[in-house]
Image (cartoon, rainbow, N blue to C red; front, side, top):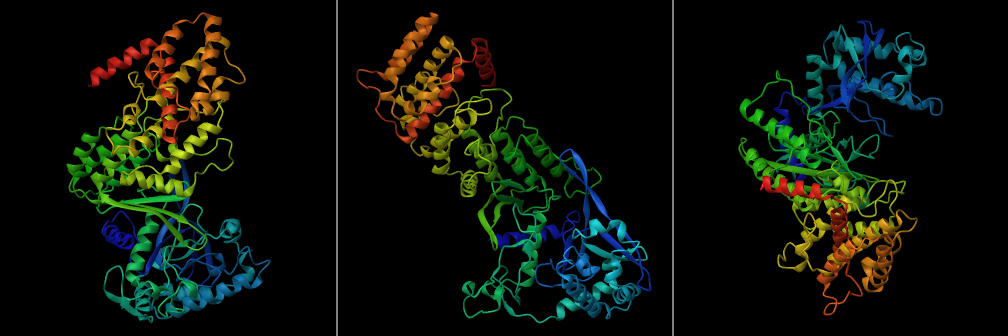
Length: 622
């Protein structure tokens, strides 16, 4: 299904004049230099080519993308391309020559053989000029050539080079391209039924590699490959691609579409979750669906690129409305789910939307997750995720919408040198968001472990807004199918003073006892939170009698007898005589304890004036 969806997306891109997607038999690659030659094959100049690309707030120079005859990405094997290559192929020089003199010699010889074989069939001046250059060029004198030496350092970095003749790119010559197309069609192929299209067609033996994956290999990583007999079946030895027969056309389409999505300059900007690279697309010509999705996934960090008015549009009214939706999401306005879904449905159609997570391993690419839904369902599920995470914030400048990156960051120790979360956890959390299913238990366990292990300091808080929100959202999804379960009453955004859930009440009580100590003795090296919180959370009966006795000393020291009233009110919720303090709390109740503590602490440190203003704002909204 993944390859079929990508193949359909290639068809959409090929009909979009703005995509610059490569047609079959060609590749879109980054080119850094034009090698200008004369009709006699003399090297006249090396012309740098580049394009200005925005990177954050800066504009940087990037090699210019060009569509060239199918490019064979260099590997340990020698494989030449037509009229395009790196310095070891085109000029016969590279950084490896000192240790391996034969490295560039083999590649230059293969480049000459392959290009002459094809260009000799083209009756045009450009082809004859390139042949003359290949016959005359001496790699031994290349480094000192007056056109090469000023750019030698850059050339030796492995930048791609193409040929220029009479001010035109040779790889764009129509006569040469006709010969190239004929060469492609004449090669021997194995016919078979394609698993993607169902048609009988030439089968691709090797599949192109994917470029642009996080932690991926420099030469790229294949999504489909069979390179060992152990992976082959049905006596398909030495026939690699025949183990999963995909036609050459479908193979080209899915790899080209996927490499397009992985480009840093692509409007559907990829993003990362742990070691996973996330790409996404809609079965639609409109790009705004992808912009809305990115805005929902990272609503407080991504800016909306402003499109030029001169660009052609297919349906100006629909495009304008879609752009407004995308910009509203990106500006981090209050996300009104009903209004957003209504605006999306008012657009032309409701296309199917795809989200794909890719991570490289030693040999090929792993699929972390793949999700497909109508676009309004995708939006609805992401909005549900944010709704479940709603929690009163400690500070106004904290993120209103906790992204998956915010969530995963809380699972990693602040003292760890490796700041990446578990790859499997990252994938399972994002999958739960897209499918609107309970979050993985590993997420909940990781947050509880961080609460137990971390200590408050300048940069770290044992219990913060994000951790409390994650625990609440996990429990909310876990018990959603049990609406009458008593835990539901405490899984709310802010303090519920009416709840008598034991774990929630004890969490509130601990927050009050901590406040009493702070008023009495100020900041100390080891507060009751540092010494007793983990024990109070797991086995409260062994800790709270000690804390209650200690609180009386603190209250009498500063005369803060108004705290007595609050402690009494909270204890009355427990009904100590009939329902004593539990000796142990389950793992779920430990999360409720943390939520209760967070709610009460926030309430204690919020002034009465702020509370009244919040209540007033809530009434106005309602």
